Structure formats: C-alpha cells, structure tokens
Length: 80
Image (cartoon, rainbow, N blue to C red; front, side, top):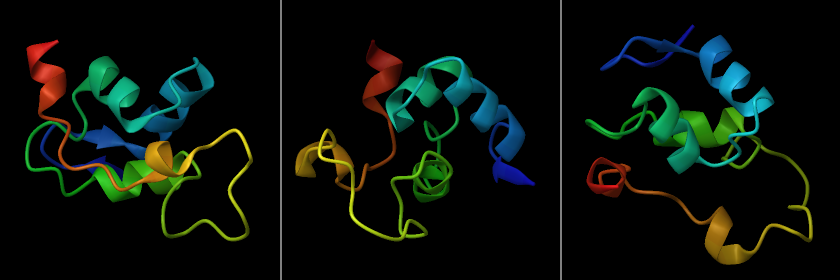
C-alpha cells in the first residue's frame, strides 16, 4: 500500500527505513522524501512508526509530548 503518493513510497519501504533505525517522520523524509511534498502522508508515516492516531494505549515514557506532536509537512528537511 502506498504511504506517499507524491514519491511512490510504500508502507513496506517506510517500515524498512524504520527497521534500519530511522524512527521519526523527519528521518524517514531524509531517507526517501516521503512527507516532503504535500505532507498528506505524514500522519500515515507516524501511524506506521507507532506514533499516530492509529496507536492505542499510552506512549512510551521515552517519547516526550513535543516529539509525539503532529508534524507538518517536513519541508525543513529540504534545507538540511
């Protein structure tokens, strides 16, 4: 299933990047550009990473409120 239609990134690709150690939407964006164009996929990326609305139960203690906040399109990754 496609997560990012702008760049043709699948859920499996996002999971592979996460398995490789990329644990935030910004890190995923740096790896494959998902979330850097229209931004409509950012919430789906968060859900795949276990941080979005699809998550049930409390967040782990290591995840602060600021890091779990919704992320706007990851446009600042382009400048990095």
